[in-house]
Image (cartoon, rainbow, N blue to C red; front, side, top):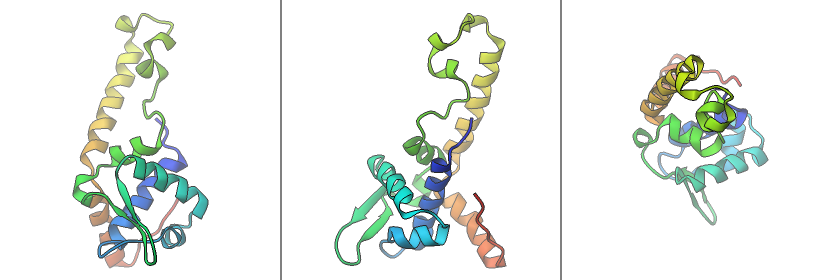
Length: 148
């Protein structure tokens, strides 16, 4: 499984919204500046997050974006699924017809399925609130850094 830059940026944008729009909304420009992202690319990502009902927008002067639900109700898996086409590590897990082997007797398919199941469980348990708590530890220590 490879998470694209879009997936990484989506998680970062959601984390930024969770941390900085607590009392209202946040502009794309501010998020992009804090996270060193392109405004245009962030716009695409926010669009996908809006379609998935993870983000809502407020129009007009002082408008911007905010989380559609509380941070403890949004999982990393939901965020990734909103922007990634396919998170599965092997094509045979998506489309059995892609596999040349008998899928019922394929040890590798079983292996990749077990890996995916573990990844799925973990990303479905980790919430935006968990990421916020982790980030706030680093902020308090003055040692937070963003790497992509």
